[in-house]
Image (cartoon, rainbow, N blue to C red; front, top):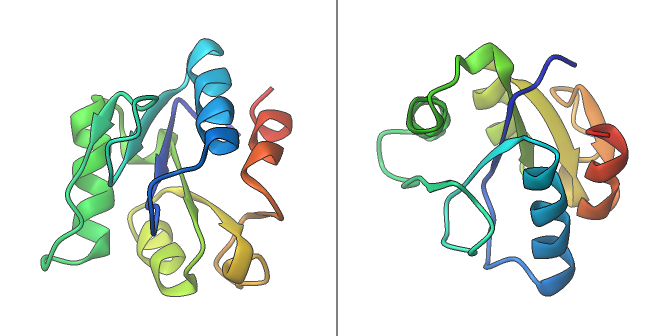
Length: 117
């Protein structure tokens, strides 16, 4: 994958293990966006009424990267579809790890350090 940025749509604030993974990804040069302030991401984007597709595109805009260089990590299949429709790569995690719209599936956020080595 030719990915420069990773977008997270967390259901709740990430735990310490996930924040550690995010910090490793930043040190590797990836730009990070999340829908909640976690202290490890470059930007925070708003999840809102305009729809998930618009939110993901806004996150790419805030990171100053084209959508096709972004990967969205998501646990909801419908949000993976929105990311896919935005031209982004998709990574299914937890409930979405078997989603047909996921380009890659993981069981745990820590696996991202293997994908984005």
